[in-house]
Structures are given as structure tokens and as C-alpha cells.
Amino acid sequence: MEPVVTVGLDGSAESMAAAHWAADEAERRKVTLRLVHAWPMLAPEPVRAASEIDQNYWAKRLVHKAQAELQARHPDLVIVGNLISDDAQGALVKAASQAELTVLGSRGLTSAESYFLGSVSMAVVARATRPVVLVRPEPREGDTSPAPGGVLVALKLHGPCDDLLAFAFEAAAGRDVPLRVVHGRSLPLHAHTPWGADHQVTKEIAEEARKQLDQVLLPWREKFPDVEPVSAVRLESPAEAVVRAAGGAELLVVGRRKHRPPLAPRLGPVAHAALHHARCPVAVVPHD
Image (cartoon, rainbow, N blue to C red; front, side):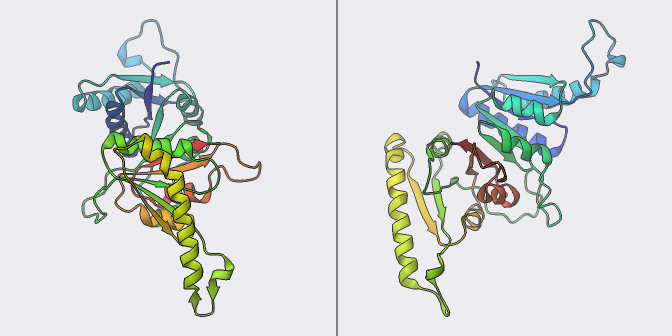
């Protein structure tokens, strides 16, 4: 199967922001960009029909307009457009299984919108078996967010993380930018005292975490000698640590377990917090 980067289109500003990000990524990877628009009410293609009675006119126009805009900016990029007669969630989950990477639009954050990220995007992220990136529209005029800077990966120190680190190191290497690795760790009960955190205990916890980080990163430094990861241990909840560290990042990479307990949410607290509160594009990488 030909390698592709897939982006879902729905005509919104969010999906066009995702399409532009996906085009840059496809060009960087030297693969085809696939534009997907899914709608269950698409009519079967007639053998011959005048354009004025084409029931799929607006769907075709949406894809063609996006394709023309992207092709103008990326003249050497191979771009294909697909209309799929299916609900968006099912179509995109299937398309994601056939792509190196799937890119979707995500709503900008305000206090009222922070919970309602978008049911389709969240469902695809939670079910896809390959990495999915959620992209927000460009910051509005007057936004004082820091300029983008490097790739950030949120790393646990228990369980497998090869897929997550492979994606993060490749992303940093492909962009020729720094890679920051953040590990958040909540303090245990015995570290708390009536007058605050016990300095000796927190120092020991941080030093042990740094040693574990160095051990995990050592083989990746050898695989990617041109990428020098900078690691940080934050003694706070992993979700808070990641959101705080994400300011100014060009891309945030978080993991998602493919197999979770039946009654557990499909997304863990770190991925959930990142998708709702990080301003930069967020890549969710499924792993065992």
C-alpha cells in the first residue's frame, strides 16, 4: 500500500488548518496527501449527469477547492481527493488504518469550548491504530502565545514506549528542531509535611526519575545522533506537567494505550489534558 498522510475535511476553518499542516508533513515525508470528505448522504455517481443536477456538487467543490489551495502552495506534492459515502467517524477510522498519519482539525479553546473538543476527532483519536494529529486554527491576531519551539514528548517511565519515542525522535529529526522530553510525577503522601513538601524526599524522587529517563533515552540518542533530547522531571501530576511544558512547542507527542480495561476511558488523563488544553498540534501515538 502506498504510504500516505490523510486529512479529514468538513469545510471548517479547523479542517483547513489541519489540511495545511498535513500538506507540510506529507511534503516533509515525501508521501502522498489524501484528502477525505465523508458524508452518509452522498449519492451514487451517475454515468452521465449535468453539473446542475449533480447531488454531490457541494461535496466535490469542498474537496476540489481545498486541493487547489494546497496544490498552489505545494506544486510538487501528490494530492488525491476522496469522497466517501459513510459517517465521518467510521470513514476516518478506516482511513487512519491505511495511513502513516491522520490529521484532523480541532476547535480553538475558550473557557466555554474547552470540554467540547469535537466528537468525531475525539472518537477517531480514541479508536485509531496509527498516529493521529489534532491541529487547531492559526492563533487569532493579538494572541500572545510563545513562538513555536521544538517537539515535546510526554513520557511515562513504566510500560513500553518505543512507538512513542520513535515518532517523537523522527518528528524532531525531520524538522531539525530540538526534542524536549517531559516526565511528570505526582508526589507520594510521605513527601508531604504540614509545612510543605519534604525537600530531601523530593530531591531523591527527582534524581531517581532523571536516572530512569537517561536509561530510557540512551538507545534513542544512539539511533538519532543528530537529535539531542533535553529531559525534564516535574514533580506534579503528569497531565499538569505536560500542559505547562507545551507552551511554545511546535508539536506535542503523547501516547495512548491500544488495549485498556473494558470500563476505562479510551484516553488516559495525559492525552485527554493535552488534547483539550495544549495550543499546539498534538500527536496521539497508540502503543501496546
